[in-house]
Image 1: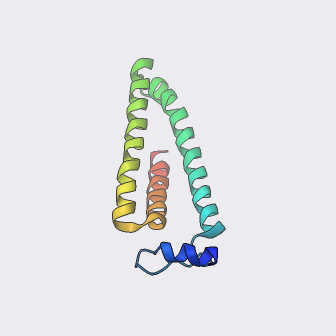
Image 2: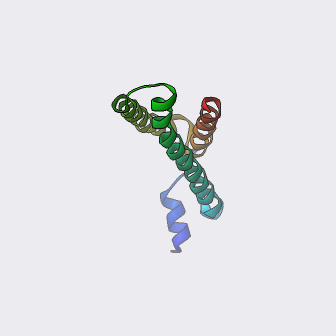
Image 3: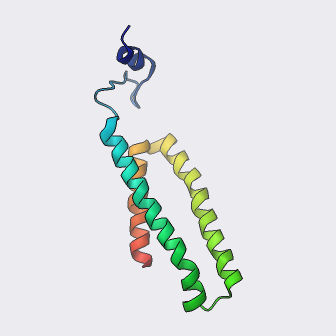
Length: 113
């Protein structure tokens, strides 16, 4: 039996139909997800790098409190990935979850700057 046929018989899409490897996923989808993740990582790192400076210079918090607020921010974002995973698995699917959360994160970053 051919590998593609074996693969499509074992996996089904979200509607329960057999997967066609030539039509689903592939290099375009993987490149899109990698691109979104790279942009998300760049915005996250740049925001985190600037927050301590903002808290200490503009908001006049002590350095220890600024670092504490930053770790609270990062911890909240990392815990929200679990919420995103639950929503992805339960409701929207991976593609629409990545699109919607990426758009929300982009809008939040633009509104905060």
